Amino acid sequence: MALLALASAILSALLVLAVFRVPAWACLLCFTTYSERLRICQMFVGMRGPKLEECEEAFTAAFGLSDTEINYDERSHLHDAFTQMTHALQELAAAQGSFEVAFPDAAEKMKKVITQLKEAQACIPPCGLQEFARRFLCSGCYSRVCDLPLDCPVQDVTVIRGDQAMFSCIVNFQLPKEEITYSWKFAGGGLRTQDLSYFRDMPRAEGYLARIRPAQLTHRGTFSCVIKQDQRPLARLYFFLNVTGPPPRAETELQASFREVLRWAPRDAELIQPWRPSLGELLVRPEALTPSNLFLLAALGALASASATVLAWIFFRWYCSGD
Image (cartoon, rainbow, N blue to C red; front, side):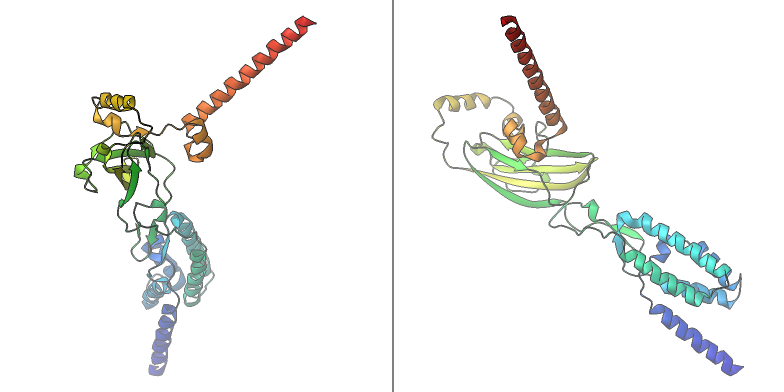
């Protein structure tokens, strides 16, 4: 009897070691409850007894906790896979199957399921809150995003006095498609800074493209664009504008006098303008085709078509009257 007990203990130890060698890929504790796991073991070995505890330990060990990370948007797919797995284990238990065989086999199947999930996008430096790269960690059953700052590095923009300066508030990672807004700020006096206390709002500027024309020495400083989704900042971009050189030769005294008059207007009005593209810019830049611009193009097309129809009708009446 003693030899049989010793052999049983050795066999159990070997079984546990074998189970621990199974790759810990599946997020068992994140997608199943304790009551579900207990119910499966009770179906395999009964409601009570030492075998029940052994079954619970083997169940957890077969899957375990690991550093597995999955695409945050794939959580529902993985949850459905674990639900199907628990139903399959219940059917095996009802058919008097062995948990020593069932658990490692289920863990291997879940490993294949996880490898087939859509991978999370990689973080794209150097900045921004990148929701499309959010990952779910099985080691703690929580999610995280890229560990990157909201503030992007300052970009240098140099223009000659009197020319146009344009800023593009564009990031190199994917933004959500809904509720995206852009707001602009300015820190004057030639400051190159990311300290928000130096910036003031520029309410007339809107959209992801903005321009200054003509650029003057008073425009030297840092312009900031904040990208938000539903009031939550996603990224802050900075542009340091350096205005150099004399005004263009084509500048006349009348233009200089006109700018002197404009200096009496509020400072916000002269600093930055929203980008209103011409027809040529609309055709060259596909991103300029906003809903309002598309509506305007459609209206122009309809007007041109109606004008052509009226002219053709007049010509036809004139031609017929001549006959």
